[in-house]
Image (cartoon, rainbow, N blue to C red):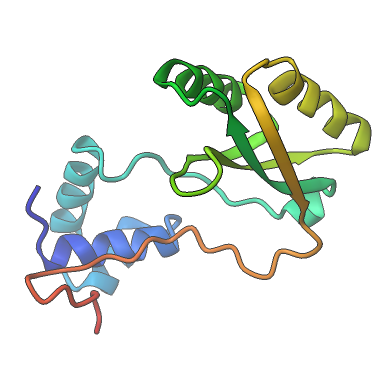
Length: 163
């Protein structure tokens, strides 16, 4: 898909604050409200905007244990990788799941309410799978930054919007 500067400005604003009204979004990206609404709908229809969510305060609403988890499988076949991925993404404790290269096979970000729930998670997702060879869990002591926005680039010079 070919995105112009207006599309990129809309995407950039929405990923920073999706609660903006169409009027406010149009003003920020310097287009008419009708143009803004039409373009935003097209970006949704084409799958560039997957969904709109509210980011909740984990510290205030769900204090518990969060961990970055590295998982190595053996053997590393397409079937074992796909099966583990399906089990991991299907578990409610897993918030993020990445299949990686040049290191562990998977990196997960998981959150549970307490240590018994952590042990239950490990049993469900890791221990019951004969193909999980190694698991390393790194518990989060403090979340210093959480920024879900992705960098957007434009044109052949790959200059970020607004630069």
